[in-house]
Length: 264
Image (cartoon, rainbow, N blue to C red; front, side):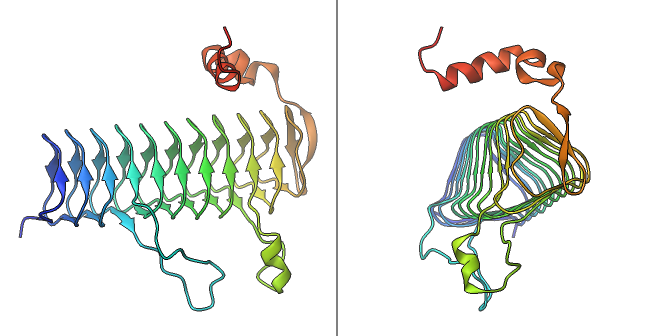
């Protein structure tokens, strides 16, 4: 069998389906795309135009929790949606209920869970895991092997370096009280997190703040400050030449207009 496409699936003109791919019922794939060998696209997944999905990726996978898991699964999730001009790397898994906007890039071996929103231009590096109910703002970069815990918010134009680790449970899996406090970090616009940094549950990293490599963030970091160490502490203000308004003025102007509709 070269590949299987369910009769109810809709495949756009110019889209190529590789060998041994499986396209299930109700799937819609736009035009001029490329679906690699051995790809599995689960029912009702929506894929835009000019999307490339590399070999053995799995799209629209339904979640399954362990008997003792605290994760509460929904009985019904909306279909996975992938926008135009996106890329999904080999052996990546993207779950049902996720939404990927236009121009999102997902590298090989990444895992993106249900109820995740990736806005336009987000880059998800090789081997990254993004757990359920996270939101990542436009043009943010999450580099190789970073771990984004459930219930995390990362705003636009952030940089998450390789091997960054985030957590959402201060009780380490003990006591019922933890269910009232589970919360991932909130990383605000333009913030940058260095390699191997650890962010504890619920911490806020302010706009354009910087966290040094190997740091452990235990409390809120104010905007426009650089913190380093274990635990992280103030080093200095963020260098002016590194601020978005100075190094990417066109981007800064667009962000300002986005905040203030109708601004000149």
